[in-house]
Length: 79
Length: 79
Image (cartoon, rainbow over all chains, first blue to last red; front, side):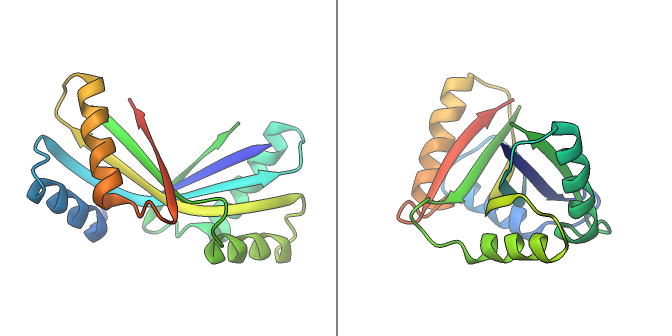
């Protein structure tokens, strides 16, 4: 089964990479862009199992060492 | 409106960051992990407009300069 973990900088944290993309879009003529934030997308293929167990274990891994909880938020999507 | 662009290394391209995360998960006791790939997740807030127009313009931007089409694939999700 496929699990995605999306790790984003917290709203209160400066995101220089997002700002760079935003100003690149503006300079290339893409107007109407109000905000850009850049994060990481982990696509994980795990052995089939109970979705809630898989989620709980990956949630623990995401909290412990895949993300930096001080400056990042994450969410887990299954399927 | 919120638009997400997910940029992943192509399947045929080595993904050392993904391999590192995979072996980290294994070493920390998370078994059953078969593959990990790491990509970028862009969360873009754009002025409300016709979703198909927004998609077409961001598709062009993703192809032209947000991704590297030689080694990366991307997909766009609206809403």
